[in-house]
Length: 326
Image (cartoon, rainbow, N blue to C red):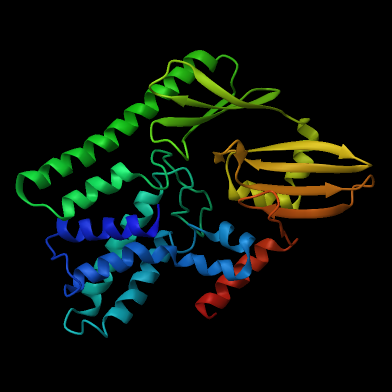
């Protein structure tokens, strides 16, 4: 979710816990700062797209990271609210941080809650990155009282439940119509429409990408991508690009083409599809002897290339060490 929505969630949480929605209230300040703070991982952008997108929603969104950041936030806020108490500020900041990671797992990008012990991104794939209905219901709760406030609480709960039901219904439809031929069915919120779902059907020889609008009977098939041989896929998946991309996204496809003796492998992140294009890619090019010519991460656009170093894992660890001052 975007930082503004996280901040609004923090204000709603402050109100729900009996605190005044005001900058003068120390607990509210700690909750709101805690709810926004995990996106501080944007500082990794200083070291390029590879560092940022690999570390986004990992260190600062993990349970360990939230505990650490709550202490840091309490230390800073203690200068502005000296009577609030350090541990009291840390508690409220941690509560805000938990709300951030909790709602981040509601969209398809997910968050590494158990980093560094488990690097898996946990995701419910339920909400879009920005959801105006979700945001409006929370704002309504914050700025109203009495029965009107209760209406917004009911709307918020009903909308979350509605999206769960939508997801279940679309998944059952896909299972019923494509389940016999599909090895795996992945279902994600559309990037552009609230009531449209993006799906990936993995078959033995094909990967099918499509969309299902809940108000329409049929599905729209967007692309049919042919899989490369398993032994070739394993080889490129073991490369630095393959390992990098597999950690970046749990759902990807690898395309291959040969031009003038150069074999080009195109890694495609299947989660995000907009304007007839996939959002994130990686490229691995090899000559006839198997030597790597190009290895790049191409986020947001295939034309936007960042070189993937062979020691990417060590570089990430060193970056974190530099940030925390070790």
